[in-house]
Image 1: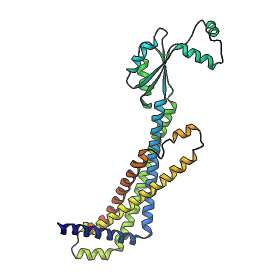
Image 2 (image 1 turned 90 degrees about the horizontal axis):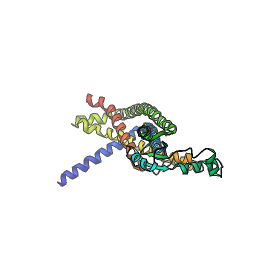
Image 3 (image 1 turned 30 degrees about the vertical axis):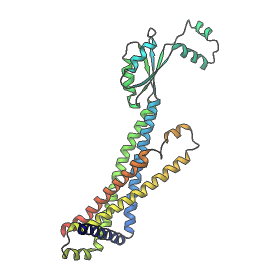
Image 4 (image 1 turned 90 degrees about the vertical axis):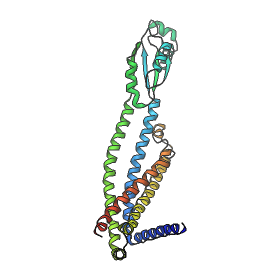
Length: 305
């Protein structure tokens, strides 16, 4: 048992020493590989963060976006509220009696004599109204359509232009990000592949000696795979550091901005996805790129061995 443990740690020590030896042989190409991966992951992380932020804004607007529901003259507001709450996708329905709406309208118009205005128009011309909130922004059109089909509903009105524009922006951002990330992924893999190949060539004689003494291809080339993983993880750490620095600078720049802009950047650095999920995704993505690049580099050499 003890011998197995000692043998295991001896193998780990060998792999780590070989990995660091290869990194020392890589020289400036190591920095080229890490820098390329860092740029790729920074762009990927920035697009991911922007997508999450737009998702938060859409959710926030969806919670605030209201559907104005106007009843028929004969409909009774109190009886309609329970029916509205049964509509799928409705989160809340607030009744605004026509008397309150008429009073608020007169105040907005600067009319102090409410009874005189009512008498001139032959009564209150308004109808009972509901302010309905949907469970999410993307459910608003469907909820409005369902409500308009209810008996006793005269008109349903809502504005969804802002939400639609932000949704279109998010879709466009996702499409462009996929293209950019795909291009830089190919570049990063190519740089890592070239770097690993140069390291393998620099250690060609050592590898030939190991082959002569019977070392397997996996045992010989696995340290190069670890070097690729090192490039990916180091690039991920650098990318995450740059992202957090950028987000903090952005947060400081919007302190004195209008509330609308502040709302768009709410939770940039405090979101758990930014603190936990983002670095995890970057490390995994970077490691995968490093493994792919190193495998492509050693494949030709190991197959020829």
